Image (tube, rainbow, N blue to C red; front, side):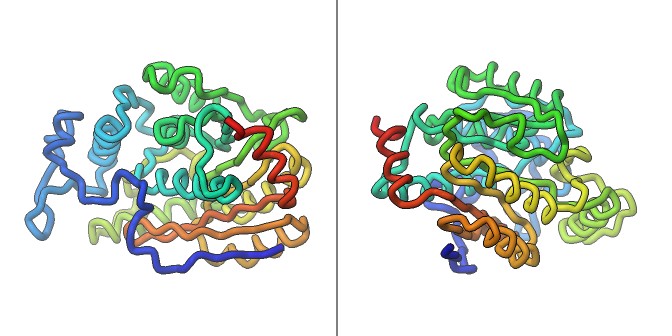
Length: 320
């Protein structure tokens, strides 16, 4: 097993990320007129929004999706997680690069590529970006039927996305791939942004810290700027336990999925994750650092395929 770790310094977003430059909020108001009411000058006098306001953040994301991805309908409950678009796009672009390393530097495009999104959520954000940028097909799983219903409505309401996503309900909260991946499935990569809090109390503590950083105010019951229900934010044992379960289960599906990956928020969890992976003896492990604003996350990806097996996979699946 070899571990290749990207440099920590990454001041710019991925070259293909559509949100590398400062937002043109006035142009975005054309895409989402409701956003106009939430534009205000920042400390430097430039147009901005209050990033601690969940309504403002959601409207900004709707405008981004409309302006850059031609998504006209993106509606879901205010209780659900509202993802930051640039960060989610980073994940998709970096896994596209990862697949290109197995394809002579060429990103495989179109319906020959299948991506499994574990915990797609109500916003369906990863499939939206993956389809818009690379025309991939997706399998979307979630333990919440209402989130799947919301996600499916988004897909069916945008013509460019129709027919590109298959939905599957995960009926067992501790399962990751079991009940979702069939024995004959051939999935190119799995992605996951796992819940990173181990309890509701820890989630509240994190919300207080985020609110304090954004507003300078201490609030006992802060309103999450990106919202999120319990299933989206909390997992027994937290991010590390989720990763441990995924790594353990990945061994059973090592011939069905070329690359497994997940987004790790806490750098302190990496040492334990590498130790767990080493026990499974994958052929390769990669760590890709993602920096959006002041936040650094890591994609940890691993494969059980040898070079020869990967070459056969490429020849059979990506030949078109």
